[in-house]
Length: 160
Image (cartoon, rainbow, N blue to C red):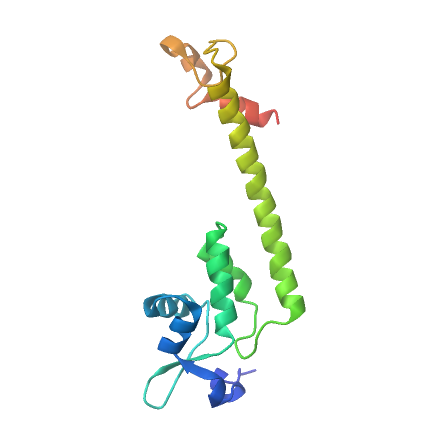
């Protein structure tokens, strides 16, 4: 089944030139072009070859900007947006699915950061620099026979 072009779904009054989209979204025109190139936002070309964007891409751009700020890669954003229709804003259910997915992602990030903070606090805060207790200190490279890398730190993670 051949997909109907985006321009046939959207009224010309709902198509905005790239400069308007960039200004309304608070991003550079080059950013809008980049997002289009990555497939994050849809665009059509006018008869004069001018890039026009559906008004609802403003919501996508806002979502992209917030996502990146929270450490979600553009590849992850693209994967989730790929299933959304280009000709209309996402439905409440579609936004809910994205929100749930990113909520899970952020929860995983929080757990990693909490573990890192605990490790750093324990290491910096203890002040002991004990060869037997410290996960970092390795005087005279005594742990070389156990393998490469921060063995004690890695072993502590495996035991979590």
